[in-house]
Length: 306
Image 1 (cartoon, one colour):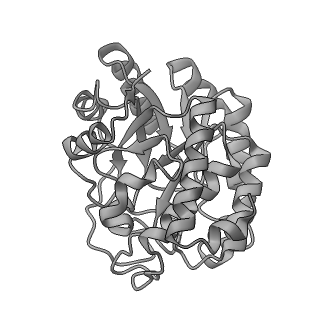
Image 2 (cartoon, helix red, strand yellow):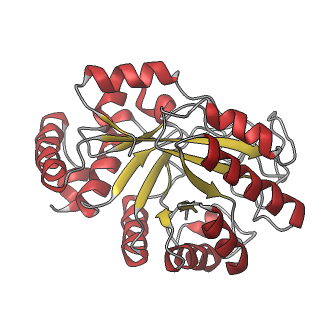
């Protein structure tokens, strides 16, 4: 399908595209809905200057900041999501995990979660060395999340404190280690469709397993606090574009869906998503989990926790 047919589609044409996407999903077995969830395990004071992020030390925002939570705190949070979420990710602010104490806490938390819940353990901990990747693998982590945020050519407009190639190499290292790799971006930053296509081409080369799609929620105090370019229909077109280009991959809709899709949230599944993040995000609130489950059940879709 030509990209222009998605970009220029009116409402009637978009629903015809959704029909074709439903056939794709049925053919490849992506009709059941996967759920994932996260804990903001370490918040704020980040050394990176990502223009959208409330956790950057470059900007004055009103978020709560705290050091890495204890393994017991992380476990207690995870228990609340057991039997509701397929995957549970420990997320930390900063460029990466460096200290022995932080590594110890994360490894202990993973061990506890594996023993006391049925959740698949994932991490989103920035750029780390291969030695720690191996330790995470041995501890039982199955998924490694590392977003590219946007395309290589647009990245310098969003972040200048590290190189795009560092992110590419991190995803490659996680893939080589055998992790279920989760990587995509955040949309509504001011990028063009050409940038979105460029990001998709990069992700194809990396052969990631899951594409978490985020939409910008403008945060007061950040450079993008007044950016509000997305409409619900534009969001659905972005989801459809990625499903058509990644027919065999998991496509999960994550942060910003409440703010940007508003009353059209149920259509994310018609547009191609087969996964959704439940609960809260990092510094913004999500919907009640019960409301998301009701939405999925009302659509007569099944949740896949396997």
